[in-house]
Length: 341
Image (cartoon, rainbow, N blue to C red; front, side, top):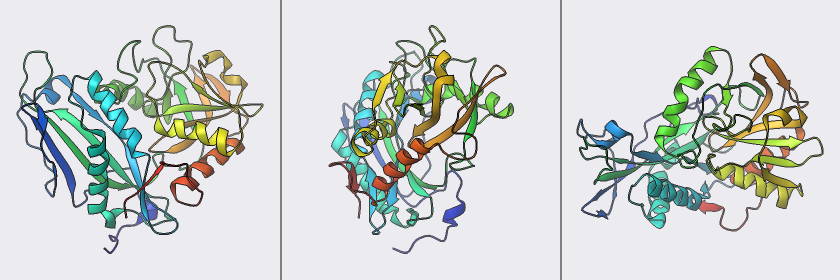
């Protein structure tokens, strides 16, 4: 297939309709066979459970063109596992993990001419999601569900690319203890919308959310996990039952230890110790790592020694190593790369 005529190097992180999407329906206690379709419109009852009670979950992963021209996915089995965990928590039927991976592969293959060429800085974003579709007026789970996968070519998540951003400590809470912060449910992101609009209006790129119980510990942003580098070059990420288990973060911690020989630690990170770190980044599928140069705590500025001009040296090594694995420049650990074609 010939690649689409798209200005790959100037793509934003936005939606572009592609040719095919995957759909499977759950009814009478079982999933149907599923199929690729062309229609991007969804028809449902005005009383569909997803519209009334937000019974929806989703995933996000990317397809890449490697240096040798292959189209690959990065650890889709972990996205399948995480969606299954989200479904259990939200009283939704689990879409079989092997079928999840197959559906993603089918969808990417069907939209292969939308996968950006190697070296453009763009990727094909893949969005699997599931929602309750039958009418529900009393507060209860749906009986019928739809699982879908669509794709869209995207550029960098943050407009400045890898340039360090400034974030603020939010007065809002992202997730409650024993809530749904550790799964990828749409309602978590709805909770963050007012907070992120407020932050943007005040000139900040993102929010840092603290734990809702004590407001003394760092959790995550609206869409990414935190990663810190200590002044003695240790890699630290916050630990909390309210944090989404980021596949990118887990991969970066492995890379730090096994590829770069760095000491890694997942632990509670306190607000009062932010000034002791040398570097800070936000990690997730969309951005991989976005460096943070400054955190503003109600007027008090916490500036990291890595500065506002570029990624800190250790963050840069982590970024280069992980993207090198994703793009085929470096050998990947066994099972990390799924070849589409």
